[in-house]
Image (cartoon, rainbow, N blue to C red):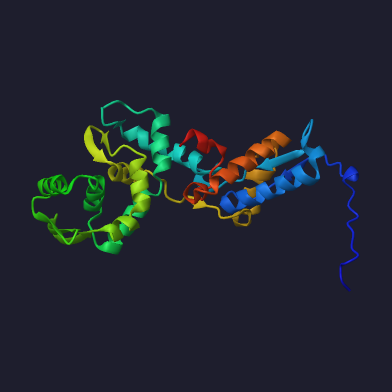
Length: 294
């Protein structure tokens, strides 16, 4: 039997909930599902979003870590970076290139923006068998005219030679204890496009505890401050019932609910739509606070 004559018997006038709580995973997929559900209420049940709105969104954790006998939860990457930043700042003083001390807010912007910097740089380093610090140095100076680029590289790395053949820059020689052969061409630069984007959006140099350091140095030290035993929850189903209750469901413990009005939903949908052109931003599991970061 087909559904050609089927009609919905749902009567919106009889739908009178005291509260509707949307609970989706804390990652990017969960954010999409959350927006689809909010869209449904906005389009088909708009009265639930007017006046004293009945629509709420739960705030499940993206990360969790055992501290003593209790669990500490982080709703998103920004909260996690702020937590690690505080550990990082206890033992490290960070200045900009002009030796001005960075505020905690400025530091968290830099750290959040460059969370994937080490991963990207190490991946290219391993793929092309290039010393990671040498690779960063080359990328830092890629826009120099060839004569200036050659002089800069050979001064910093005196056991290397830089030549240009058929329009391709080739670098040979010792970097540390390793012999390097680098074809600094368009193929390599294309593979480095994500790294170059991060470099273009950050200062290249900082002073860490009085020592001039690169972005790689900064993010490497930061990575060493990340606590062991951190758990990233891919979905609500990965949380044990007790932890799900503590972090997301039970009032008076860790539960946080955000009430949505029709205007809130429209802003949320507009915001999510704007992110579709920049997947690298969206997949960071961000919340609206990203506006304060970039």
